[in-house]
Image (cartoon, rainbow, N blue to C red; front, side):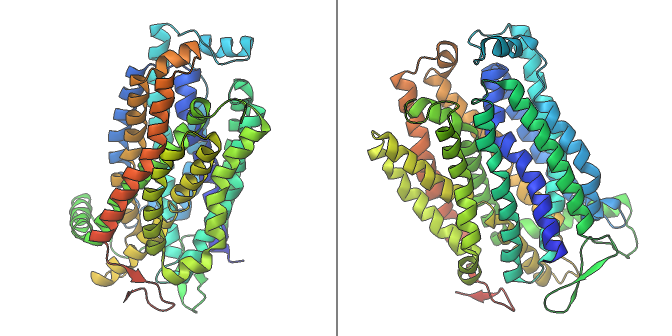
Length: 483
């Protein structure tokens, strides 16, 4: 087992267990548990969207500055991981005690709306939580993406192998959802949920630190399978540039990248894919509460936990066991066919009167969303290699390319929840939170969101990739053989 790949896997696990809990629960916790008003929720998501636009390129460019410690991928992961873990824990500690205490006393989600001042406090809490968590997650995420690209440079099959390591890590981390659902009784026992998040944070810190140690140091080289050497964490010997020169250099590099249709095809497609993924993760629990009868998968039941676990681990299992297929036909082709499947799956809305068929659809939707999302690491790494060859760069500019991708993709993390919550509010979701009475209008709206999302977005992704991406089939030696 190669240490660089193990470093990728461990670091991925540390990031994934935090991100899985964050994406699955933060909307439900702040809406249902902390009772953030729709006004504050929309303000938080809007500000978060702008922050997302700024922080990723900032960290990307900083990590390409010659001579900076930020240029060392592994040192970035090691140094910032305690701050990431701290911001994650901060997220689940309520500022307003009323909802929290009521949930403990009644062992149910609070049904009484908090006072406006308390809602304001939790609104500010949500904003700070999103800003802090995403800042450190973005910095480490950019470093991880660059480490992935550096480790697998010009080696298509090694890219797939590295992706397999990362997916095994995600697969293991996915068990946190089933355990959390069962032990916290679907958040009704909120202190248990907090304890699980704290334990997950400590485990993530251990994995991130261990992964940063296994990868080597800024001066250590590892032998590749083809006999060449790889500098795991870049250390540049060139003359350091002035601030003005760095800004000008970053501007020119950005222009070169954004002028390439291949890159635009990747990031536009990734934007819509991120929107689908966020909507799926954030609202899976809420959709289950509203659309599926309680006697099929009761709240807090083992059956419910296993259902969510299946939705999360099935994509990773499918990806791991199709390593050879992805290596043979290429990640972009797998993504392309998945968009066709997503579009067609939306027509299952005609069968939505059957709750068991809804569960089958949710399973299919989970596969087409979460199996494909990791493949963007391969698409971006391929682009890093192509860009370096095309522009005759001595090294790929992985940090900048991965961060520019985040500029396009990450706003979807804020836009998707706002759009979904808007439609839910139009159908009486706020009244449902108060009365716990499920109306036919709300159920109909939730069903439309569930089925129309893959149909519409899958169709858009298909058209973008078909019209803008120059499909290539991977090769052991080169990745430029046109189909």
